[in-house]
Length: 639
Image 1 (cartoon, helix red, strand yellow):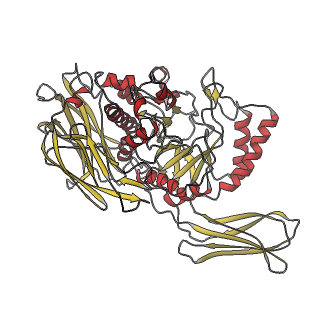
Image 2 (cartoon, rainbow, N blue to C red):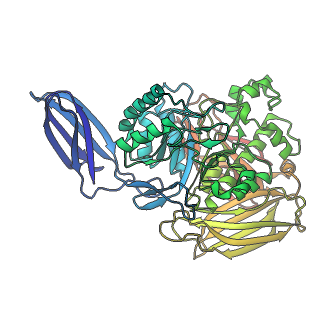
Image 3 (cartoon, rainbow, N blue to C red):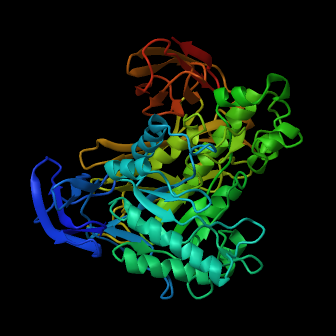
């Protein structure tokens, strides 16, 4: 492999370049004489047997240091540039089982197919010109901790800072970089006049060379939701002069990178049930919805999906407690719906109070209850959508929820991490689904009124090929076992070393519900290896009523909570199962740094205990405090 260093030589002298390995040793050197009129000059630096750069979770991220110096004829340095880069081969290959007319949507790195466990990235703050290096590092480390392999830099946002791409290089986060074009919801067709097309081409010729040395940069795209607004047809190189011009620049200046003509790239724009039923093979890369569809309807939509790539979709939820209290004055916190003008201002598009109330029988009487219920729906709704996409791997090559972060402290938003940098429960739901080994289930609803039996398809996968069997248990709210079943794990739909999410079905399980003693019950899942060791576990809350309101009537659970400098331990000591346990940073919102919990949104059965790592990231030791609350535990604070 080789590095090509291209510079503009504006003075006569000697151009010299050196490549250093991750360990610091020199692995390549080149020099040449230049004259003031040479213009663009390239130096080739062959690097024998370099260490390969891999995406997060698939290997290391060795980075090579490249230094280029121009000295004039007296030996005085008149120009210098230093950058880091990495070695990897990347391309897009067809999805297995895709229609013949589909674009390739599977990312292949160094010959290995990489499932896009993604998230959509937006500007981290509306005041984007203010450097906040610790905040940026924190957010990107949260993404890496969640097993993310790709961030899509949304075309409605920015070309990001140098630090963003450097952190992605270090953390193995692939980047799908869009140029700064985005549909507006009013007119989503970029201008076609020659002057505008020429402007966009000039911008691309500046941006592409500045970013192409980053190994994390994987895919270029023209922008977000560029489409014929009336027909809802995504644009491409044939239908938009701007898209064609940007594609040509990328092909010329960065030919080793992948290119997609937009997000979504169609041919159908929206992931909607009626459109899926009308043309299931036309859902290649789709967007939406961005709202929870309701109990049962959420499951029906995502179980019916046929897309090859789901590059934008989401579920809305209320802000975390301390962000909510910081941005919503106490006398303006009720009602929480859009009938409150302040709520309309602070995220009205994502305010689904009416659906949250309907899902809990209209019984939510305080902002704290609405928050807990809203975040439960966002947590369950988003992780079910992501799991449904993973169950369809490798035909579905990626899920990219909207959105990871938010640029303004909203009261309601689809963000998984709020503006303060604190993850919502939904972050942890997706983080679990993105683990290398995972177990999940396909079921029709979480509220089983009118269903005589609980029915679920059991699924699992392990990136390392160790999964052998799945165990499923149903318990009531006290942990009393209603039924238990074990099944061998089936074969993946496309087995082999190139399948990084070898999703396999174990079978269908039916359990009559007439033996339940409580309205709330739990589905408990485990994936085992050949020795019976648990590789992954997963748990879902269900009710046998028409909604989730029985969570408001749970008998009390007794727990004991202790905290150390780097962990919190929660032990169930009596009563009913402790459900919906959420740990949060209890310090004032202005306190520096973050409490990063290694797991969250927990359900503990009687007798269980869990030790949760806590990383006090950029936070001083003084004043640390943790808050824990759940559906039936009350609130505890530890200082």
